[in-house]
Length: 145
Image (cartoon, rainbow, N blue to C red; front, top):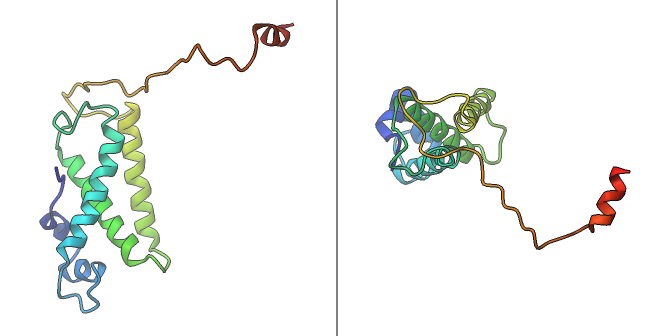
């Protein structure tokens, strides 16, 4: 499920700039396969943060904030592709950090969707294996004395 579209991207940056980020130095031809790849990476990143809190894509709300995060990360990804062998503009690096901070806030529960109850806990399950003993009880008791 895509959280943004090429039309959404064109609200953020010009068609010429988008075409250049997609590899056309003239800024005329838009490579939709590249924007789709960048969007897919962006959306999978969003899901990697939110699926720990929401049971599945179906239970994740597609809100304006998710749309904005998808747009911003897609733009960041396109810049990363285009600037793979050069230094990326600082504003793009800041944009990426801001998006990641918002995603971390959602993941931790610091920020949540209005009138939406998460379906799962964000805390990972702790797995305890009682069969593996690295220290004997006697060795551990020595630390307490």
